[in-house]
Image 1 (cartoon, helix red, strand yellow):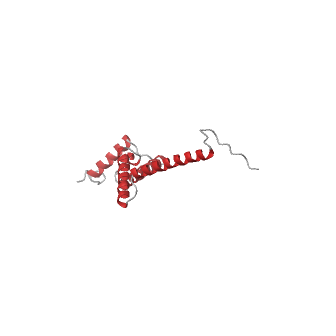
Image 2 (cartoon, rainbow, N blue to C red):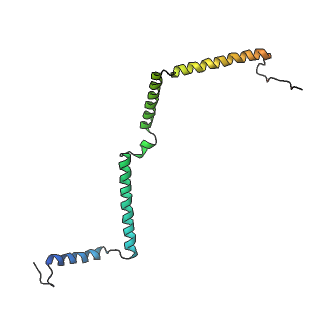
Image 3 (spheres, rainbow, N blue to C red):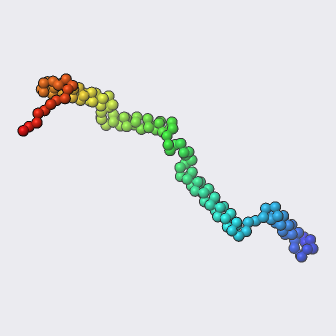
Length: 134
């Protein structure tokens, strides 16, 4: 119905009064302040959207999954086991075979060094003096 004031319905009149009260309690920003608030709200909205997009892309991962921790160590151990398994399947040398090969090479080198020392007369830790050619 109408309340008799200018022919406007009562609900519209109450809405106007509520709007006036709201402006008294918390006045709306105008001019530069309104522009700053609008830009701030847009910036925050963009940040929220970007964060949601990043979360969706990373599948909800937290930061520590990217930089170490127990999961990282477990992944490295799993990768090492996989590589060892593939080497065995291909017939490549195992870790024990590689160690044995290195020890054999070191022993061979030590034997050659003994033969070299015997050849030059044994220098027992002293420097070898090789005379200059003239």
